[in-house]
Image (cartoon, rainbow, N blue to C red):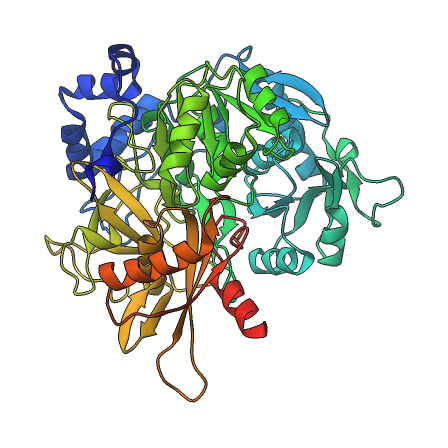
Length: 606
């Protein structure tokens, strides 16, 4: 790997190091360096999580008998045996007068204190009881990330219920499948969605999906189905509510995989999972009391619930903006809200860079950015850092079934744009080649266990998905499959190259889409790409088709030739590129995964 690709663009100053949560944590343990701290966290996992729980102040109705049953089973660990808790209680340990939420909705801005938010959450929990919903009831939330969505989520969990997360962008058929898979008893939604100058349907999609009884925020006059309720009518009168004490393994949330192939995986989060999200935020994004966290997302993607728990358990403030984050209005909201941690997806940064809409704003309060959802582009990340005067980007890669990240960064390590600098604390990783041997590049596997990692799926065989037929680790330890392709660079740095679960056969040689795309990304002028294979009628080798998003001034003919040459040189001289097709944007799921199947279908239909 060229040295220029691992050149740091930010180095921690003494003030950053001295005030970092990690520094204080390591000092308490008598540990002098970050690499030593990470090694300790995976060699003493139970002790690590005990320290995390104490540091975060997780509230228990009944203290656990132990941090975990021993010996710690890496495939099916039992965490916090004997405990009873409701994780929402740990979200309201800040001063009731401290700011919990700042928001902009419909052009109006406002704030809520922790006390005010908890009162609203309690009214939601009371309202659910008045409708006859009880412990274990499943309530879908299908709406943008608004104040009502946040209060609805926390109210359902506080009442002992289970949130069913549905992205507001889904069509009616996708909403229906998720409601049915999860067995939703009720849905909280809103009348319409306003994005820029567009008005988009929401409640009508729930009706088309034949959803259960609905509570609707701001319904259109006369639009409510018989039995459905307006949000204000639904809220209970009581501003006090005693949280339902639950088992650690009881569900708080059912989330879904992208579902690009068949029925989406239904992944349950438990009362343990938010501890992982809060830990990641505390140590990796360095969230402190009084910080303000913004991350354009919604509850249908894991970063929505992550944002709630990483903010509130750490006694910070959530910044909510439910309009399109692609315009300067969002940047002005970030400035007004005094955001200190701004989360992004790389495609959003690319849009900002092209439009220059975020330039000359005062983002000086930002201490750290964080990026997730897709592989980053170095130039885009350098541009993002410059928008706040040269602040670091914490790359963050994980998954819904992890409850957070498995590889990320810290404010104690120099920031290399578009590169990761560490496995997440409490987790370890190995990279293996196709023969199952340790390698500098290849498929990345997790070394379990960890709080946050899923132990079951609602509609799949969990063991088959993550453990069946996985190779053993270098020390013969069991490994957990995740399906990402990574390259280990010099020093502690890693770079993501996409998924490995799309493979193709080119001239009798098996190769992953991720490998093709990794090479294409090295060509000047290529921003991102997606590789697909089209089988020839009558047999023979498949055709390799590469869709590319290119820089505005790129020479398409040169890019075509350069990609073909790079693939021959870096992968295999027998690999022949049939076509390089320019495209404005790659089709993506709600969680930002590239939909190669859609590209394949479009090519065949064209």
